[in-house]
Image 1: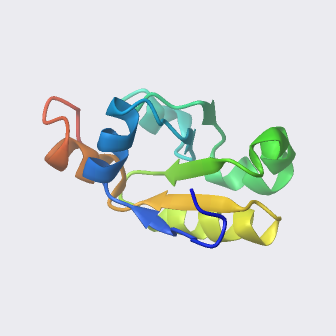
Image 2: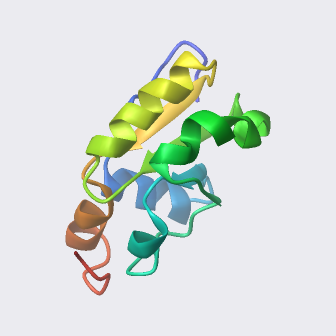
Image 3: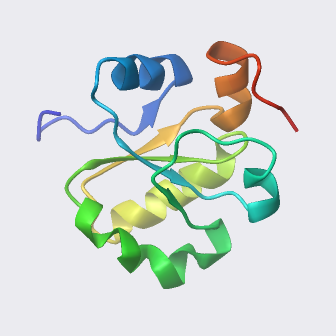
Length: 113
């Protein structure tokens, strides 16, 4: 990613294309454990939204890397992305539509809830 370009959102199709091209960003799932049990993307870290303020330091080695945050529909993850940017993370990207959009646009076999 160009240091002068800041991408705030990514669609499921765009993320899938990146992953297929071997350019997988760090994926942070901020949903609750009960949601994670229903369906999940190939995440790199799972930190529930309510724990993020106390645990974001666990992601410190990702501060300069593309980090995609996702939830069920994209609302909670948008707020978490803003929070991480405020903590100095350089490239935090919200997955538009979350797992629901992923199921609609990329993997129809993924469970929806």
